Structure formats: C-alpha cells, structure tokens
View (tube, rainbow, N blue to C red):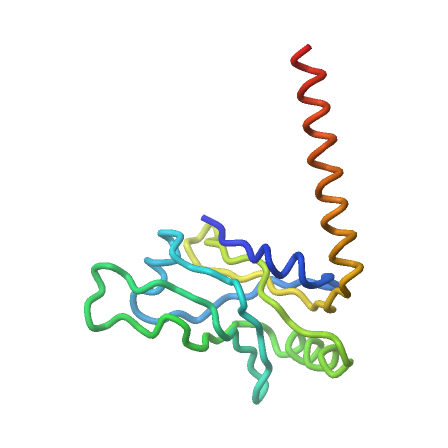
Length: 149
C-alpha cells in the first residue's frame, strides 16, 4: 500500500530525499494499511529539534469508535539528530521546504514517509513538466499503435 503526493511532484523540484518513520496513535495504522490516507497539501516543519508533518489526512478507522484521533493532526517524524540538523540548515536557505512525497508500509509492517527537500517550481517549469508528460504519453501511444500493427 502506497500513498503518493502527486501534487508535490508537480509543484516542487526535489533536491534530496529521506525515509522517516512516523509516530501514530490508536487506530491510524489500520486506516493507513487500508489506503485511507492523503498527502495532498501536507508539509513538514522543524520545531525544537523535531520534525512534524502537518495537514496529512488519515481517515478515521471505521471500527475505532470514540478513540479515533483527529484526521489532520500533527504527526511526529522519526529521524536521527544529524538528519534533522542537516534539514534544519538546508531549510534556512530561502525557497527551500520539506514536503512528504510517499507514505508506505515497510516489510516489517511499520508506516514510513519519504520526505524531500524541495524548491518550488516557477510557472514555466510547470509548463515544461506538463509538456514532457504529454510527450511521454504521445510516445507511449505511438509505440502501442506500432505494436498492434
């Protein structure tokens, strides 16, 4: 089960990436395993030497009852101190931010988040990304047609 942040790939150019654990409470892991999560409009902040992911949506677990936590609460990311320090130094540069790109369950059954140090794209960069996507789609279409003939 994987949840991708497609909007982030369009909005940002990724410079560096890390994989972090995520601290969950209660029934959140069951919702994530069921694919009921979204990374759209989520971002990461660093406060008091800890990295937090904000605005990540995890649907309430259907069988959870009153113990379900808030759907868009802040969740702590689990990183090493040197990784946090490196991210903190990089974010001081104007125009750089940290965005979650992928939420997945690893082979041990734990929830992990891929985060990326990113720089926002300009409008012309976004147009170029769209053009490249259309070109790839057209090339795939032509290759499928040539195989069919």
